[in-house]
Image (cartoon, one colour):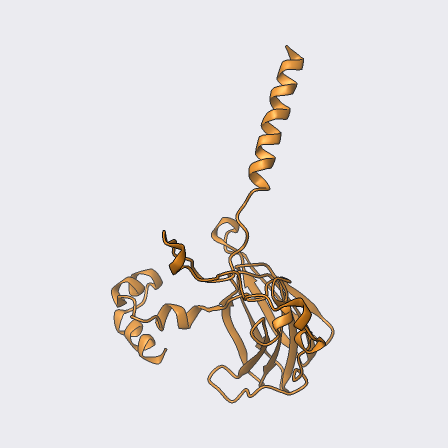
Length: 220
């Protein structure tokens, strides 16, 4: 009897493993609406591939991350991205890179990357960085002050930010685990959607006066 039970347990574990290892691959686009007619289909997995005989070293090279970005804007920061659109050789490799410049008091406002984790290293200045875990983990806020040479990781999908708390410009570089990580800036998405979300919905969700919500929608 014990032998039979052992075989059942092994079979169940094997079946569970087959389900666990058979998940869908991470999407490289925000959505993919299914269609029945192949003639109407479009290629969705990033980019078409270049003929290997036509590939050159330039396809794997990008220049310009030594140039500071313009931080003269509302948030006081600038992100210079090296995604697959800027560096074709990244296609299918699952990685990308950004340079982030921050004016004193500037921030990379709360946002999330739906398709990538992020690892950030500070090279100049002082940054306060952090992310908020999901409801499942009690919305715990993890944060730390970073100095040149310090590294911080933002797990995939978590809302995170960086804020320059120093008196000089700050610079950081970040690697992301996707050729096209996507970005959802929370305030812009919620209050700047097109068309706008019904103000009554947002007022109740954020426990705000409806006139405040309408003002925020105008700002964004």
